[in-house]
Amino acid sequence: MIAEKEFKKVTTNTLQKMKAAGEKISMITAYDFSFAKLFDAAGIDIILVGDSASNVMAGHATTLPITLDQMIYHAQSVVRARERCLVVVDLPFGSYQSNSDIALASAIRIMKESGAHTVKLEGGEETIESVKKIVSAGIPVMGHLGLTPQSINKFGTYVVRATEDTEAEKLKKDALILQQAGCFAIVLEKIPATLAKEVSDSLHIPTIGIGAGGNCDGQVLVMHDMLGINTEFKPRFLRRYLNLDEQITGAIRQYVSDIKSRDFPNENEQY
Ligand code: KIV
Image 1 (cartoon, rainbow, N blue to C red):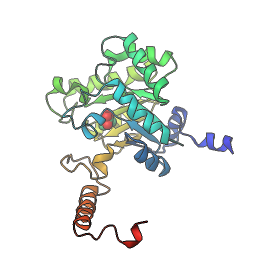
Image 2: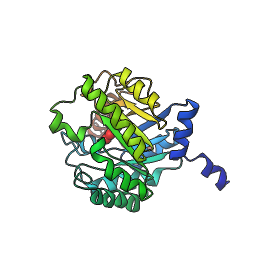
Image 3: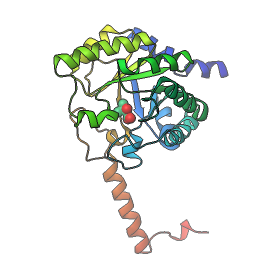
């Protein structure tokens, strides 16, 4: 029984096999126990404890303020809910850029204190020493290229990346270098679909796209966007699967009204 359950757990090897077999990989963000439990039970392959927690959980304008301690707190909550999926945790801004020793120390803290399975970091060639050091310590690393939100102050805007040849060429090179350095997968964010296809075809590790078209090996969305909790964010690539903002607002309005009108609680809802 235990062996059967173990067999079904998603590992980095499972993802390689899925790519080889042409089976698409599903990934979603989560930051807490309750949602992670629902997503895992619904069959998601990967939960990303994204540094987008900085935006959707803490209300910051960018991903930059979230700390390593805060990421570990979110990751611990998600890992407690996990039965089957792979849990990937973002290394937050400032926890890996200074040098590869600091990057390794941050990755080790995430693995040791949260029980997550892998880490993700943003950037190409400039991160290679860190990627290699983390991978040599036995920690699987997911790369992230294209629109890398931790560099928003360099980009100045969240528009589509790598539409020009120079940036597209660098991205293709970076993807190969990350693969060579030992990354088990790469997120491609907001780049032209043709470029994402070219990169995906050139790699033996899977690519996970967000705003990168249908030819990536998998797809990821931020849970608040796809569930319609965050309705202000309306990029073209986003498909909304629910309108939770309407449903939650309606439910809360009804609750307030029921309390005010003394309808709640009724005789059956008391001791
Ligand atoms: O932090 C995050 O949610 C991410 C995804 C957008 C890929 O990195």
